[in-house]
Image (cartoon, rainbow, N blue to C red; front, side, top):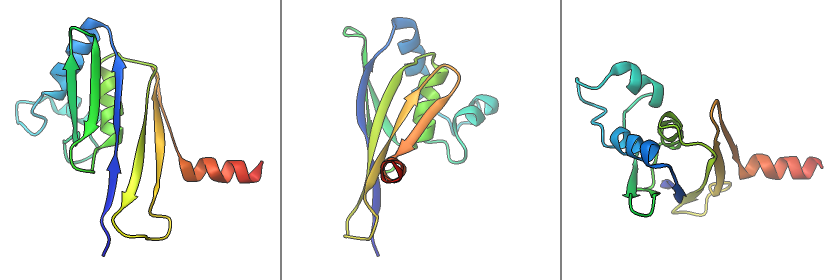
Length: 132
């Protein structure tokens, strides 16, 4: 049996209004009955947890995001940043394993744009390079 993990750590600058709204979003109790189910449905596909910590430095105007335990919800992280109105943020992640399993290591990237979120992974990029 092997354990698989996803790790990410990235930072970005954001305007004050959008950064404060992002902080409000990430501190929401998404599992609460008081949480707007439409908003929850816009961010999460299933279990409502980002699996990441967001550190806000309001003086510097920055946000640092990092995984809590090797299982961040990358899609939800991207959606919550986009919902806050913060764009042109990109981040990468690493896929790791505690055993040397075939193809168990890799990673990917995400770019948050106003109307879409672009994603890719190193396996796809490698195959594209092979094809020329």
